[in-house]
Length: 422
Image (cartoon, rainbow, N blue to C red; front, side):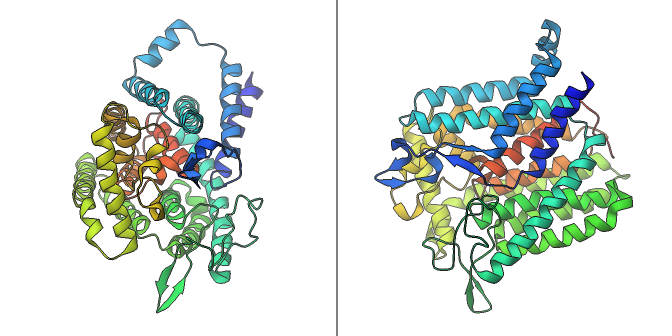
């Protein structure tokens, strides 16, 4: 029995190592097209991470056996379990009403699998013991991402231009729609890593780099290693030219330093101050988002245009939304066939008001849990970073690497194991 338990955890550690990869099998269906244009967001895909998650969950069931009645009751008595289950159920109702059922089904099943993985993490992964291993595995991934991102930036295109290379997206400086930034008067293509867009790459790094920074103290004997990895990851983050990720990272880093410095003096009060600052910024961002349409910047104009579209969609589909992944079908400007760059309005648009309220409830419980006395504040900061960056982009809900990272964070937050200062 002990060997079987170790096997499931080993697969989880491998999953962490494979977290940045973009390898998957795509199934292009008729429902994947919008007005004759193929939409990436409506293509059902099985990623390598999905296979590992399914295997982990099956092994977990085999190792533990079917839970007893008392175990089920104890699980259901937890507010976090109730909130997540109700949230997933609300997504299912929206799926049933989707006009592109096949494409929406793939999106729903992935979210369901990731939420089940978060339950696995909350029960089987002990942060004080296992997080050190997770940090090492993530560090190896950051080293690989640094080599790839630097090579991409120098080459101004994909390294191997082949999806088989860890899922690297083929692109060059002449590819239509490729991201471009002005650097010292020259137009440069940011680094993509193994992600679909530099912004997604940056969002992923903004969370992980704070974890690595925490490794300076969590693993004092290997602090030098983590400092090197942190610097390499920071270079990768800079090469993404993702301004939202830059801000999210800096806010997260300053919050970490602020709480760490005064952890023995009004520790809980410091966390509450950070919370108020984050929520204030999120409120301001959501209020001014419609005004972005008046800016000449393509990025801001696109965000403003998509935000206004989401409001129109919400008015017509207030209760249950338009279905998973279907927001892109309502975008009138084909240049911007993307989800609204705000996870709250995206969930409202695609799943309806009940799902939005339950999603906010889940995040509220996560914040409340991480504000408990003695609770390690690293995951508290991660939740706040996701909320902030999620108010300016959609990748924590739509892109599998960052969406999975979101549920992993929730799994750590809702853990039944101890997560005091470690």
